[in-house]
Length: 163
Image (cartoon, rainbow, N blue to C red; front, side):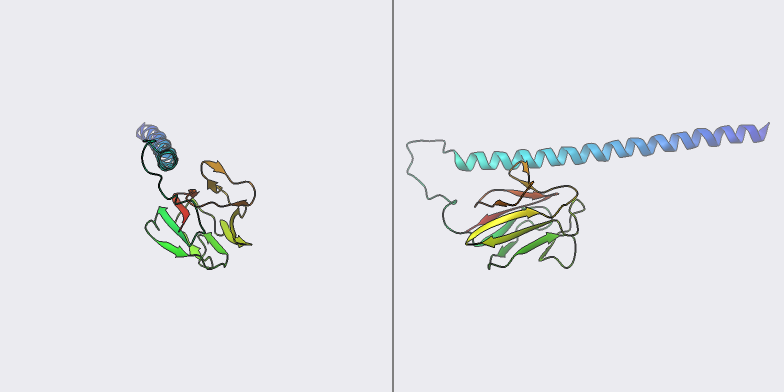
């Protein structure tokens, strides 16, 4: 009788432990989805503020989107606030220590993306990463030119070309 009661208690304890695991998993997924959606909303809000002047009668301002980029500026993630001088050499982004810019981001692949110069224009390409590379709010499917001020997102790391 006591052995049967012990087995029943162990079974209920095991089921309760499994439910705690499932609930924890759901909470983590919910948090990650919320962070990703809020990051993309912030970047689209910042871009829309910068491109649409609110007062049409104000003096025309110099556009930050003209000229050649000189830096790759990190605007979000572990590298936020850092800049990398563009010297014409390709920039390899990823978690690997072999990369030009090692990302401390669990959502990036070992060799995630590459930014390179071709005849004075900067391009970005995804290197078959698991979670993808986003330019603006669109997932990168092929190499494409990278413009000044356009936000690039790899996992939780965001960056853009600046002057």
